[in-house]
Image (cartoon, protein in one colour):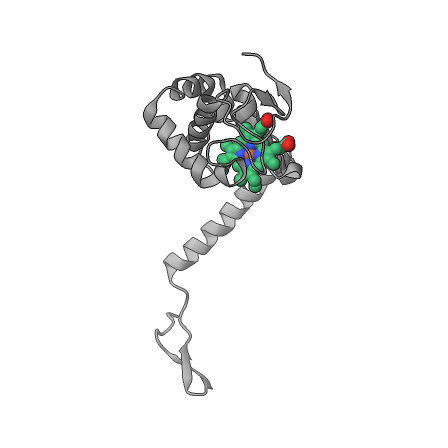
Length: 191
Ligand code: HEC
């Protein structure tokens, strides 16, 4: 016996009435498909390839891969890589790069290292004495990570890698210019 369409039910909720029609076929099929899919998905998710049987093991694996990438990136920050040393050495004689580096220096560093790098709160950057080493990678490392307990800020993430390159190139260009200022601190680095 075919069911009548659009037959009103007796119920009446504050004026809201309803039909007793069947669910549309397409809707019902979609519903069955999701049930079938869930059976497949649950078994795949828990026991499928690469999961080691457990979502947590999978998470663990992905976290390890992620941490390895983070560690690698931290170890070889773009700016302290070998090519960065080349880049910075070249930039230290490039007027444009130096001007950009000086701009960063004046905006971010001069407050503590003084306008010409002669030192104020921070050490004199124009002498030949360095607390943390006087090579390009040393400078990049200090600029990136800072010496927080001594008041030198960490600039990684604040300055773009390119700005760090340029500002270190600027430091490289003013080292050993011996602007009178704060007395030498650290070890003398022979050229
Ligand atoms: C808030 C103050 C402050 C600011 C701003 C600052 N520094 Fe420093 N900086 C210091 C202090 C203090 C030290 C000394 C750290 C120590 O004694 O270990 C230092 C040390 C350094 C050193 C190592 C010097 C050495 O003798 O080994 C470098 C290089 C340096 N700063 C570069 C920069 C650059 C580049 C900037 C700007 C991007 C900057 N600093 C901004 C306070 C500052």
